[in-house]
Image (cartoon, rainbow, N blue to C red):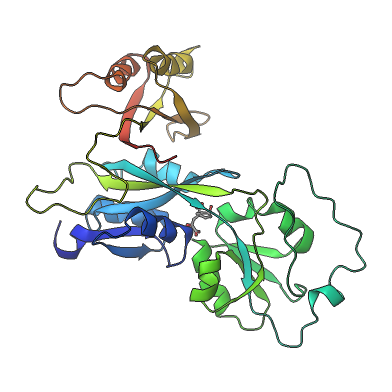
Length: 336
Ligand SMILES: O=C(O)C(=O)C[C@]1(C(=O)O)C=C[C@@H](O)C=C1
């Protein structure tokens, strides 16, 4: 790895994405260059190729679940990123806003908006009091956002923007960037407060996510064997300590023989046997054949290097004898 790449951290951009906020937090006060990428796949590629020495990608949202793009890139069905390991995590509070342009002379919301409509009944599962738009939204013909965001703002969207065309884009900040190019007031983005000031957009409604405490977990990724010589240490994330922390997480993926009853149970039992508490489990199509899956299992504990035999190493040994194929995807310090 050369020159700038040694200090470059790739993240899902453009600036003002939530991933950018995660990267800023993870590398606070570190001598790094944050490098925006267009897609999550580009972040993986930059780290795999060594044009960046760390990457930051979204992994899961507290109310809307896993980011499937990231799961598929970790699964690496096409062998494009075989050397990627997870080396950290970061949590960011996600308060979505509706961003656009308030068109001068448009009727204010309280005079015009919804006055003939019956009171809105909010489904009890949405814990955030429904945000009220600060202006008339009837001009809006098109909405832009990252696909993860729609599912986090269902109540607001179905109440105030029902039936409006939605366009998926690569990030919430990209959505804001696109909306900023349409001064007609007919486009709006689900994006962050930070993006409003960066792209000089008006906040049309604030905190429109369904759940109070909505948060997204991001993963920090690195390339296998990318440790620097001790004479020229690379800046690691603010979080990573000298490795003496006691609370760790580990991610493994594996496939099982679906024809074998109890195959998945045997794999999970390998964790239980050594007291490894599961923290998340996901599946995605394995790409091997239809209706066959790859499992992503995350648990508390750390794989030891070299000849050390800790509980994670023992569980992985057992896993090897009961699953079809498996990969260790990294161990990192728990930040929750
Ligand atoms: O679009 C962004 O701003 C991102 O950083 C991506 C992402 C995600 O993929 O989950 C991150 C946080 C929010 O949950 C919505 C979108």
